[in-house]
Length: 227
Image 1 (spheres, rainbow, N blue to C red):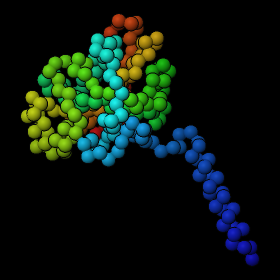
Image 2 (image 1 turned 45 degrees about the vertical axis):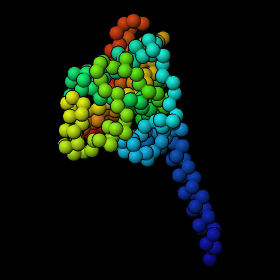
Image 3 (image 1 turned 90 degrees about the vertical axis):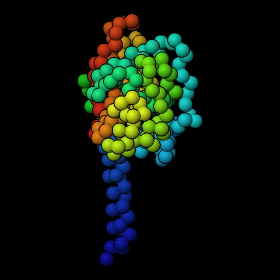
């Protein structure tokens, strides 16, 4: 009779080899909605349970007042808000006061219709966050700590009605990543979350412009999640 170890050991070795090959095979790795990076923390009661947010203690410095970064982000953020349903007057615009991470790309084939320059801006994600300044948004938009929004809003209609009463009839709130920009190619990327009653979306938005000083236009979008 063949000793058991001569059967079990080779079998275990074969299984280990197959699993290892599958793991390194392109496209096999499990899709992660938002990768866990050093600047991102899970399980904080002051953050939304669905999406991850940057740790307030690990924020980077904001771009200086009057900088090109702020001017560009102001234009890109405005375009996203205006293209969203339920858009209302600035006094109803509620935005998380701290920018959010831009997740890396789980499935590159989703972006095969994007330019290589645009894809390069998002392929690995962007995990630096900072406080957002009021000059990026039309006045009098509300920049609100995420804990204040998340603790106040649940899935109930009453909770959303209460949010509307606090922020002049607001029916949704936004969270924006910092923009990634390639001035040479005229490409820019923003990732945003939009939460509303019984709906929501997380999306990468690709902007393009033909020359410095020309208006940015939305050249492509791709969902990360949607309700």
